[in-house]
Image (cartoon, rainbow, N blue to C red; front, side):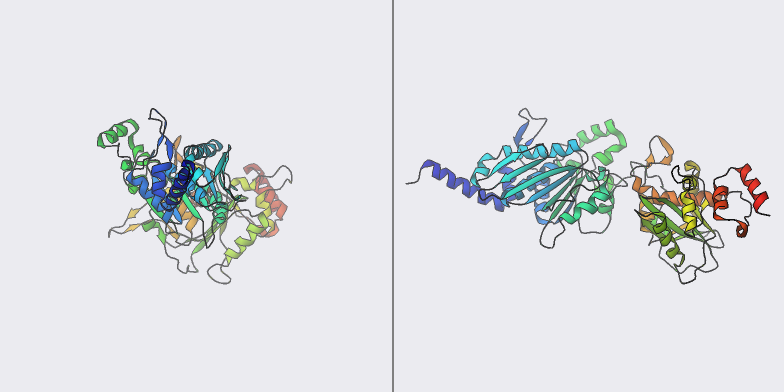
Amino acid sequence: MKSRREYLDAFRRMEFLYAKDDPVYFADHYCYFEDKDSEDVIVPFRPWPAQKEALLAIARDRLSLFLKARQIGITWVALIYCAHDLIFHPGHTVIALSKTQNDACELVRRFGILLEHMKSLLAGGNLRCEIRKNEVEIQSSDGRVSRFKSFAASPSAGRSFTANILLIDEWAFQEYAREIWASAYPTINRPTGGKVIGISTMKRGSLFEELWTTENGFTKHFISVFADPRRNAAWYEATKRDIGERILQEYPRTAEEALADVGGRFFHEFDPALHICEPFEIPRDWQIYTTMDYGLDMLAHYKIAVDSEKNCYVFHEIYKSGLVVSEASELIHKADGYNGENWKLPRERLAPPDLFARELTSGKSQAAGFAEHGIRLTKSSNNRETGWLYVKELLKCRVLPDGRRMARLHIFSTCRHLTRTLASILVDEKNPCDCKREPHELTHAPDALRYFAVWWYKPPDVKKRVEAHWTEDMWEDYDNADEGARRRMEERWAR
């Protein structure tokens, strides 16, 4: 006859196997969470309908993207699914990525709360867990170890681990979102497995917004403010009075509200239907210019054709990081051949003034380095407010007498980084005449366009140069001289 202990062990084992096949049952019967409004603080998790749907969606979909309102509990739902996976699949690994180190530790703390309150279920699987500051281990009786690891956002976060699940919390607000996605995605990108759970409220200009609004492999789920059944119309109106228009971003009722232009797009003039066109062969009698923003972090280089009516067409893009001057020059020379062999060279190659400043160590400017590789640059202006005004002038919509809408600037659809960043970059709240400089990745392409626009509308008053008599050193001295010194150089050398 079996003892009471044996019956209890057999029952726990049956419960363990039943919970393995039903994540909603697992959540509803064995999971606790932290409720700051509850007297007991740690209370049983009783999922709302939207939370149950989210849990099933995570279980079903390989790549899940959740756009949500604030305080909906989707992070808890994701942690519950991760706990279910690690408990019932010994040896699995979950990597969680958060905005800061404190946020990373907070995810581990929450995960620990889940495990500390399901001891009977863990006993049914003969499992034991160990909770540390940045990770949790679940050890099975045969020695296999499941791990939950949490990292702060950094360009290489999660690169060195192979994961079964990648959980990215508050994705839109992570500083190195693009670098993180590039390094972390390969850790789960296997033909036979691997999941991504991306969770965030919306932030315009973020990678999260780009993933949400474009076609890709993610299954997208919107979680409304009213997913919490305790919220009603009266609560919503009171909240709206307190925080104003930001309610659309913090507590959206629809995905369209979450994408509302609350943060203030800087280029509200930009309209893809008006400014983006399909590529065509540039006529050979159009004038060609190039403009660029350059640093080791990014070369953003654009070729611009201007027709006889002064309409500007951005028709070629280089957008690549990690290039030294010689490598950048090589790509620019290749771009000179775009649109056919022996394509004519640009009239001017526009660049920011900082490229003409001499470095303290070498005594040579980056512009001189480009000149050594056959790329002679023309110094544009770095006046941000004036430059942005001229970009907006190029983007401005004009209505013709026949009712057609026109703009001076057109961008080939192949210049995807320019169109992406023009649509995403936000107003600087402290200076409405300027755009935000963070995330910095969004600034390179618009800056390159700004150097063209400010030069195009206000070309510099530079006397005609007699290039045949000037050496590279003469050009470098001239480019770094003030107006008085330039006049003296022209009198001496350009006769």
